[in-house]
Image 1 (tube, rainbow, N blue to C red):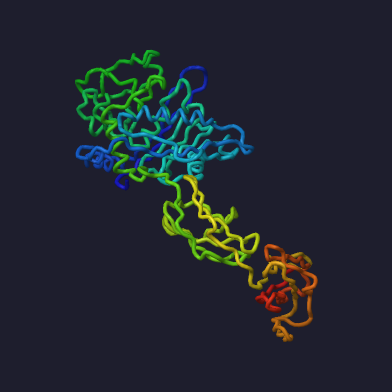
Image 2 (cartoon, helix red, strand yellow):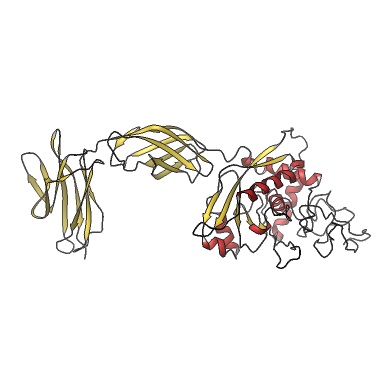
Length: 480
């Protein structure tokens, strides 16, 4: 895939009005890249000779449907089903089949629904929720093209389709046309490598680089009639060339959409070879995660413990949940490990299911993580500004009495405990005033007082069944 770079805008513009839409593309191969592309062509990478027959190769497709912010609009599932059927018919000769590998992903965004006008906006859409090892197809109603695809070496991967060009009663070819680009098929009228002679004498290094597709002067509704017959004329571009005789039924032409219904034998071979040699990740791709183990298997009710999930097929955007609560993902190690921070639980002794969810599916282990009673702990949210409220949170065994104090740094020794603060005390609540809830937590609101930039110490006391226990000692600075 790194042997040549083709900058492709494989796009199809939908003309206004009741007349059959004329398809046009903006594709650009930089002059300095042409020789590399031709060298790749000559290397035989697109030649399936010698490759054992593998039968039908199945390719996963992930659909992303753009809707308005309120969830209205968007392409119907039946149209997506039809698009898959269209592609399966189109690529049957290549031995390639397609299937929708996950539930349709709905992107509720007015920006992507109404304002896809630039290449940057198209690329931004293609970066939303991509599914690894699948053809990601994004459907929107206001794209400036019928469709835009990517070659194997495009910097941003995926296909974006205009809804009105996707599997309609009069257009069953544009989606397959764009998939053709995804498998490195050029337009039959491609000119970046030089004009193809109608005699076919330079077919291997000019035109679309495929020798069994006739030279194409540029088809459209002006030179292909409703019977799908080429009505144009003119001789070829090379000396002694016969007249043009293009194929108005080729998917990769700009012929009438209703006419296009076939790939040539060599196009089929090129598409299949691209899949095998340049996009092998698609074979067996879009697999759901397989969660194998969770360690450690227990932690405090307040959360915060580091937990390692081991499995296979974890994607880069997989979400981890404990008993349905989203956990913070701290590190991803390939596709086999996720290190996450356990979220706060709800009750002591809770046996939480741990799950991994991603666009291709989900997996979970029931009763994988037990929430234990909290050890005494205190924390607060900031910043601490004079005259404003902060929340101080005390943790410990559920139902136990709790108290706290805010004072100046120092040491105070009591019969039960030693504290990290001393008088004057800014805030104080006795254990008789506070009780930890069923989640082993109680929150206290304190209106911050003290001199600007003064340091305060905060500490709690939990009266447990084993006797009074102090929490950790934490500091805050009073800000203006």
